[in-house]
Image 1 (spheres, helix red, strand yellow):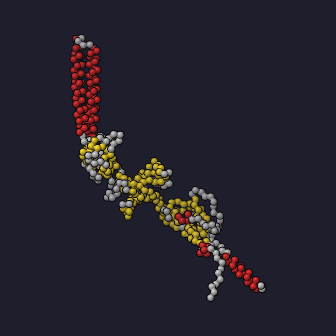
Image 2 (cartoon, rainbow, N blue to C red):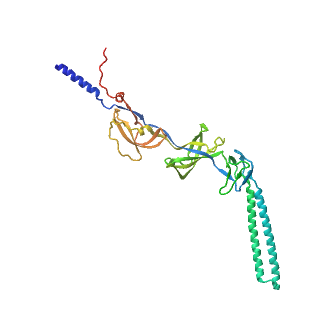
Image 3 (tube, rainbow, N blue to C red):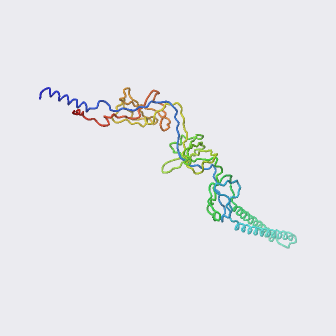
Length: 379
């Protein structure tokens, strides 16, 4: 082989090696500028609508329902008769107790007269002091029996009155759990006949807020919510109470929060599920960056202007900017504040004219791999 042919072969080999070796970094990055604007942070939860005051109306005596005077959605006034239990047994019991009371009162009269007679005969020594003492004791016992009989009469009269069930508050019947002719048994627990909502023009939402968010929720904060019955309509309310009693369900701790809602048209019903959004913060004209910048992780092939920190404070976050030529990443420690789910407020570490990396764009050669140069097609 001539020297010219050897030189040509060596040149082709060098050209092949140069084509196979990547020249510099093959990574390109997408960056987003730091902007100023408003950030509104919400806490979301779900809850159930309920009347502000809801009263269960029960029966204090047992018996058969003979009258049922209201139904679902019936408006009622306080003291209005809503149902009646058969009073026959209780009326008979009252008459029996009244008779026993009358007998006891007659016995008192007799004992008093007996004592008076013995008292008159005492000066003539016709009766002994023992007889007078005994008559006095018998009168006291008879008077005590009258008190006991009077108590039984009062109890029987009250039971008879309990046969008439009345509404304890003004409101609307939202639940009826008995029918006419049904027998209710009032033994260990009071049977519930009706549930009356006092006023559903103002309602409550009982929302469960997670322990991670409860620290941001305060009385007076504005609330937006929707219900499945009206998916295109947004209702408003206000936080009125944050209860400090925790509820743990499957190791998740939540706190009940009461939200007051105006319902003048009574479109909202008790028991509806509400998807709640509580406005907890509104910062105006602040520095903000996309949340993707806070979640960005550089590829293993990335090069850096300086080594990224391995330890950070709990309040610090790591983001990256680009070097002037765009080939290297510059790690920056920042302090973040509130977020709206898309952007996050930055309180320290970035200036208005900065930009942050949000993703890595890989060149086509890098993604397909490096191939040796191919000879041109033959004509």
